[in-house]
Image 1 (tube, rainbow, N blue to C red):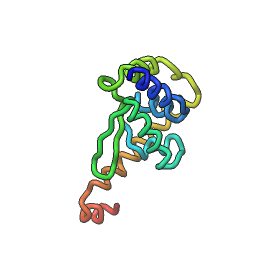
Image 2: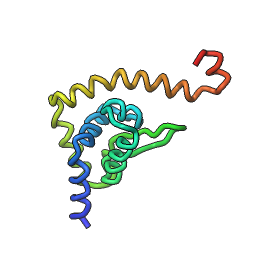
Image 3: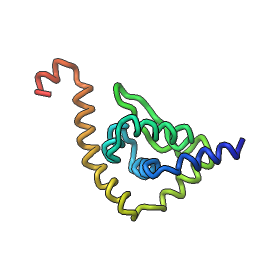
Amino acid sequence: MPMKEFIKVMKALRGTNRVKILKMLQHGELCVCEIQKALEISQPTASKHLKILEEANFLNSRKKGLWVYYRLNHGSGSPYAVAMLGNLKHWLDETPEITEIVKRLHDLRRATHAAHNSQDLPVNLKNQNGR
């Protein structure tokens, strides 16, 4: 069984976008739409990558209303995933692709937070506030 688990973890890392997702999540929890926008990929593609990473025990998710949020799984699950996450903290930070995406995260988070809060308002408040 350990060999299968190890292979699953290694296969999950073979995609460039999946590694980028892990690097983005080092900066905190993100919703699917933020990941999709940062990587400039479709929602189904983002969800597919997130599912693979979650099945390999790299991620945890939680649902809040319409939104699904992902964060790194540092403590439980696969010891191979935990080890790779620990090492990945020190790898690729200076890669232009990673630095560009991390720069986008701040603006994406601000815009997404505003949109999500607007969605959480009761309908009558949305109309009064012009949203």
